[in-house]
Length: 211
Image (tube, rainbow, N blue to C red; front, side):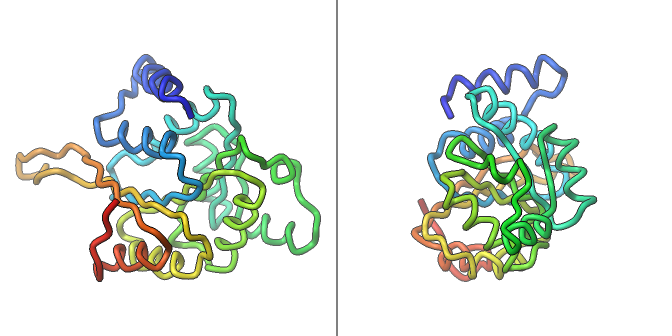
């Protein structure tokens, strides 16, 4: 995605009364312009993940791409659809469709211009998540896995079993105390790795993962 498309998306969000803070904007920019085929974004509850996903969708479509979303449950898929205003479905539906060689229209249209957002990634079962990632990557699409920091252990376990070696992860964190009068702005930690084992170790706190 061109940087100008990201700029336009951020301006549109601000014009509509939802300005992103520096951390949210950095998260969107990294997910759009990094060139990574597969990225994992982690954010604590209340850090503005919803706002960031909306801006990400705007930027991607502004650049001429299409966005589709998947989630572990129908309720989560419905929330993601409301957040991104894009086509969403469940991981189970895609898994069934792949097993039966009966792809819905949105899945059949997945290609190099597609961004696949998988929300609540830490709550997904490994086989379904791995199948969705492999399906999208094989068709040339880009994948963004999204979860919150309460799912770190679960995400780490799932990531270990995703057979893809080009993965980076982004973590949206809080700067300062916030409730105690400190700085409660969101900041972004961007970390990269050579493979999924390193990402899993970093999520579990067993290893430092650097760009």
